[in-house]
Picture (cartoon, rainbow over the protein chains, first blue to last red):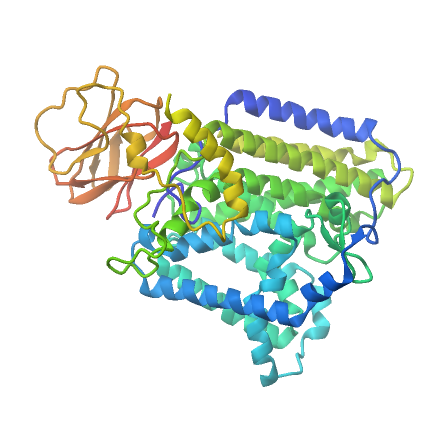
Amino acid sequence: MTVLAHGVGSRTDLPIPIGFALYGAGAAILASFAVLLLFWRTPHLGGADSGRPLPAAFQRLLDGSAVRRGLQAGALLVAAFVVAAALAGPDDTSRNLAPWVLYVTFWVGLVPVSLLLGPVWRVVNPLRLLHRLLRPLSPDAPGAARLPSLGLWPAAGALTVFVWLELVYPDRSEPVTVAVFLLGYAVVQLALAQWFGEDWFASGDGFEAYSTLIARLSPWGRRSDGRLVLRNPLANALATPSQPGLAALVMVLLGSTAFDGLTRTVWWQTGPGAANDWFSGTVGLLLSIALVAGLYVLGTRLSGRLAGQDVRIQPARYAATVIPIALGYTVAHYFSLLMLDGQTTWILLSNPFGADGVDLFGTYGNRVDLTAVSADLTALVQVGAIITGHVVGVVLAHERALRSARRARASDQLPLVLVMVVFTLGGLGLLFGF
Amino acid sequence: MIRRPARLSRALAAPALALLLPLAACAGTDASGEAAGTTSGSSAPSGASATPDAPQESAPPEEAGQRIEVSVAGGQVSGDTGRVPVTAGTQVTLVITGDAADEVHVHGYDLTADLVPGTPAELSFAATIPGVFEVELHEAGTALLTLQVN
């Protein structure tokens, strides 16, 4: 329907001022070399066993099945309500709750929530509850043994489908689309979980994998003995278990967010994306992911070659170090959407089915205040997020290199750090609009 | 000037809102139309006034105003199309001429005007909300132009 919107939305951000872009770029490059040359020369961060354990009673409560089933039942009710609103509510996107809940409140809101509270979607995932109910139908999960070798590849696939829906599919903002997607997603996920067992959701549910990935930068971790701990988010990120497909998942996030930024540039709108159809969008999205992934593989392999290590394991080894960069991109691109257009959810919640005279919370008559966050603050958050993500990424990569070889030379890390600089300059360039 | 502190406090409250999203049932209470109502011009048609029937009276352009004209023929847009920069606070007059009945929609400002074939439709408003906003034809889905208010 609209050229500019990601999923839904009435506006997009102004290009960041050139000064911001240049300062940001300079800071990123400077920080990279400072980390390589001046910072610590021995591993510094805690490992997978670090952290301050939480009280055992608290962990028992949190891990207890009563709490989890309860939260999952709550989430299931909310999801059913959103599907009902999508199908029975107003046809007009601007008056229907469902698209705003899916594309803004849930998809974007999952990021700050996971960053603060940890892997929340794993705990409240309503599909896990439905799976428990369906499990007795075929209890033997014939594919369970194959699941570890698939790793996070299925989740990367599931997220690619979702970002395609969000960024490319022309009717993405129609309420019916949202209902069909949610129902279809649940059916496919539940069917695959029957085959692969309950562990499927950690591997193949894109939203759960996304939340868990972001939570890697939260202070909430789990020690290797299963104990819940509070620890340095950087140590938490480096303790990310190495799984097949982890790098792919991060690349899908980074590439799709880059594509989102690309579609807002005048260059795209008047050039390759001028047709604004699903074909140019699909090609653009896939190429963006491929470009980002290609650069990443190149950087990690070159670094591995310089360090004299097996180049094949390098992309997987450094995957966790790119999570902060992907997160920085995400915050930069979605902050204003959540703050401004995100208000729509709370307005429409007062009358989800568009009935006459219904105003449950007295918000239905409100209008979205598009000046709630100033353009300056938005630009500041955008540049700040990209630079913070970059610095954390470089620090993690440095630490990772020191762990894999105690006497790692700083120059060995140069190719990967240069690729990170390219990601960051590219991200700033997209915000600036080229 | 009176608006400043309110906007600042709301900007500060915004991050808190993100944390409390599930609890916060209320959203911004300010109508964006109200913000658009703070016109700088004196004799301007006050605020966000859509003129659905596109009067023939050749609206005299504001001295500090900006007139943006586009026409649509056979799905092709010509005139001030593409990305149109506007300085925040400017009184903007959008003039759209089409060859089919439709509805013009300015996103964000959420202004609409009916488009009658062959008759120019006019939308006049103060561009007080910064950002990038699309102007499109609702029925046909044609993007007319993009307002960049900064």
